[in-house]
Amino acid sequence: MKESKRQKQFSSLIQKDLSEIFQRNGSSLAGSKAFITVTQVHMSPDLSVAKVYLSFMLSENKQTLLDHITMKKSEIRRLLGNRIGKVVRVVPELIFYLDDSAEYAARIDAILADLDIPPEEESDDEN
Image (cartoon, rainbow, N blue to C red; front, side):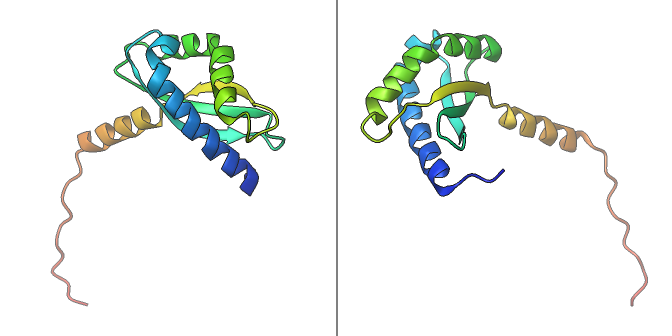
């Protein structure tokens, strides 16, 4: 389903502010020194729920880190509310997801690099 202009604006606002929150408070929120990137935010049509996709660098166990962040989502939502409270009526509920698209792309690149594709033979036909 296509997002409305308002949903896109709201998504951008939340993505920017959450990125800054994780940059400043990342180690206390995540409990590790991992670098957290907010890759995407998708808003529900009524703007009450934000699906937040996170990417982690320098982390051994990404799922454990995601679980830790999910446990602290009320604190993250409060910090977000302090930033956007004057712009929005209701601070949306946050649902965090692991964004593994970069890892997926790296796996595809590795598979393609390992393929043994013979060079194309030149034909003598001139058409």
